[in-house]
Length: 88
Image 1 (cartoon, rainbow, N blue to C red):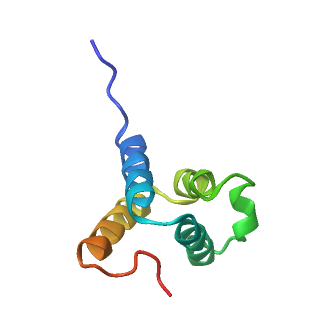
Image 2 (image 1 turned 90 degrees about the vertical axis):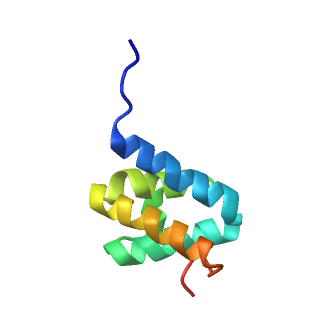
Image 3 (image 1 turned 45 degrees about the vertical axis):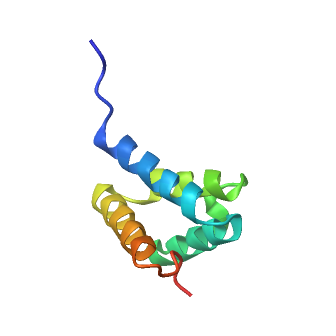
């Protein structure tokens, strides 16, 4: 029997997949900074890795389930509408 993957992990992977497919490294880093500002943390606290690693840290450790679901939907909607995935 296969172990079930927790919904939170799936949401994190879906967000990272959206970012990998649709954002440049610079946009991913901008998203880290924007999210840090939204949750009241310094972007430097997201770690020292590449932008995708930093984003994974932010999504995993700084956001709750509802925020992750909202971020995933928001990113998917903006991309589908042809809007910038990262706010200016």
